[in-house]
Length: 27
Image (tube, rainbow, N blue to C red; front, top):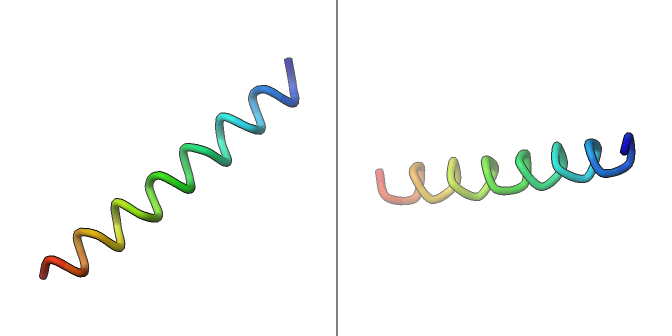
C-alpha cells in the first residue's frame, strides 16, 4: 500500500505541475 500511496503522490504532483504550467502559459 505504501508504494501505491507514493505513486498517487507522484501522479498528483505531476498533474499539479502541468496545471501550474498551463495557468502560467495562459497568463
